[in-house]
Image (tube, rainbow, N blue to C red):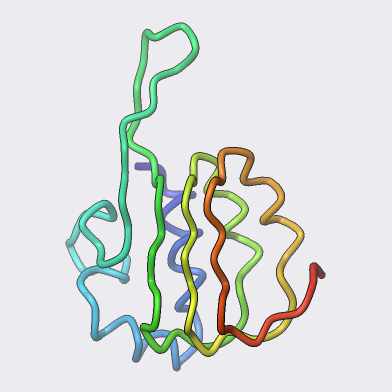
Length: 121
C-alpha cells in the first residue's frame, strides 16, 4: 500500500468534523496502527504489473454509504488510480465533483446518490 493512497483516503477526513467522524470507524488515521486495507469501508486487491514480475496491494473499493460523512469530495481521491468502486451515497457531501475523479480509469461504480453535489469543478 502506497503512502500516496493512504493520504488520498485520509483527505476525506482532514477537517475537525472528519476527524470526529473517523474516530467512530476502524482505522481512518495514519497513527491508528490499523493497515489501510482493514479500515472500515476500504477494500484492497493485489495488482500485478504488465510484465507480471512485481505486485503491490492497491485500494480497489471505498464504500462508505450513510456514514454521516460531511464536507466536500477531495481532489486527492483522483490519486487512487486502481479504484474500481466508489460509493459515498447518502452522506452530507456538498460542493462540486472534482475533475480528478476522471483520473480513475478503472472505475466501474460511482455512487453519490442522495448527496448535495454539483457538476465537476
